[in-house]
Length: 184
Image (cartoon, rainbow, N blue to C red):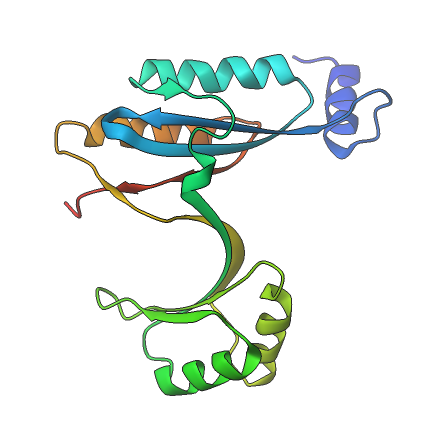
């Protein structure tokens, strides 16, 4: 029931073929209930819509949208290469050290192994690990919180709701937080 022109225009807008449409990156910072820091990265063609959507999500779930720099200092940009349980830990560690990785972390809960790099050395470490026959299950440059904030049982629902709502927004590319949610 939608006109074909509207569909064509939407496709051209999304692929960047439509004249006069420019995309810009926006970063939002704020706090969820319980003092949980939240960092939101957006890519949008409508700045006002993005601001309104993000502000509404924070307000709806009891959070506060902050000013630039209010929480960003709590996060570091790192590269992470993840390997599932069962991969030879010693082989990964040796290859990571030789490739110039910053750290190797083993998570006792599930046996996952993470190789941590700087953003600048991420690609060279990833390539070196793959040449050593160690293709990661997941690899990305991400933001990592320096300190996690434990979330009380009475605030878990609100924090999870805010993070989920932000992830659902069309313009949002990434949502980072320092929430330490209970396992149950």
